[in-house]
Amino acid sequence: MKDQPIKTGTLSILIVIAVISLAVLSILAYQTSRADYERSREYADATTVIYQVEAEGESWRASVDEVFFTQNTSTLTDAQLEQMLPDGTTVEDGVVKATFTEPVGSADGTATLTAELARSGSGYEVRTWTVERTGARSGESTYESIL
Amino acid sequence: MKRGISFYIETVVLIVMIVLASTVLVQLFANSASRSRSAAQLMGATSAARSAAEAFSGTETDETVARTLEGVCLTSDDYLSDVVVAYFNDAGGISTADEAALVAVITSEDELQTSGDLRAAHIRIYDASAFVGASDTYQQVLDRASTVSAAYTLETRSFVPMHRIMFPMGPGPVIPSAEQESAMTDTAGAMLQVASAATITTQGANAS
Image (tube, rainbow over all chains, first blue to last red; front, side, top):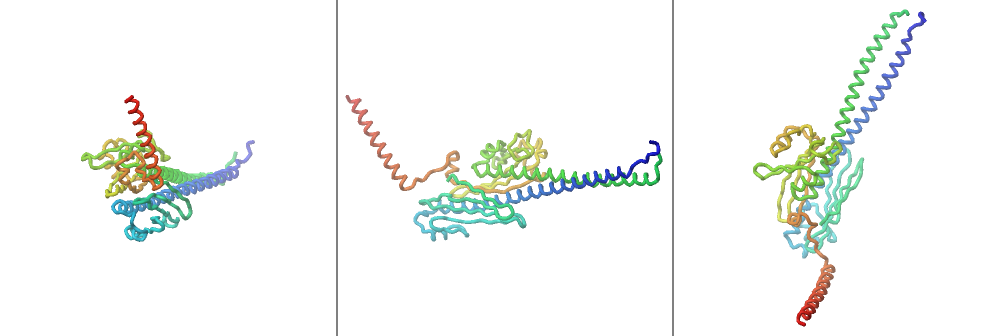
């Protein structure tokens, strides 16, 4: 027992294996946290842009509503009505339509709001109000207006 | 037990290697933990901002926004401006002030027009720790909000038509179609006939 040499080589190998394992674990943890952060950033950017196109749509709707409220639109043809509405608005078959598109991030597609208002007498009803995401993470959300 | 010079060299090399590796790995793990916390906070803040934006879109006044989010609406000393303060947990769900991880500060502007009100909201989400003891008055909230950086900000707009301003609790007027109007007129006419017949009968009964 007295003459048995201390086996430092085995200990070194064990420590090297432990360090390598920890290094791999730390790299994986770092990659995961980075991916989590990028996902969060992307979600935040997409939310900002989606609400930006929503805001553009609401401003547009306010302008359209002002025309319907102040003018007697029931006697107007679609073409006549289109001339009174904001730029980028089309009126076809009694449907007032506009789309608003904004880019999401630098290379992550777009968010597009499609708004359609159906003429009804001297007023209108919201027929479509859809936000669609194109690009890396596509999706669509809609709501039915209470109007 | 004899220990040669190679043992000591190997031991020193191992210790140096362990110290170096530990330093690098601890930094990497700390960086990962910090980034994960930032990611979770940003995700929660974004969800909280979305909730606030939806509450803003679905209501007509700052008071109703505050009520929907179970927050408070603070008014300026001159009674001209409001700020809504709402509290959220770290996942973006509505929370109480005591348990909140995030604080939403919502200011809004009204652009009145003939047909309604185009409202614009500026929603800022902060770490709740920055607002401890500073959310009692309108001025306190605005002062703190201007000095602390927000975790996330969101701008949104909502158009409130005139009928929703005048009748905020109801769904708004329903304009009947020509067929519905005709059916309603027929029904009303029938009801009037029944009512007048009943009146005549009652009068007749009274007379007798």
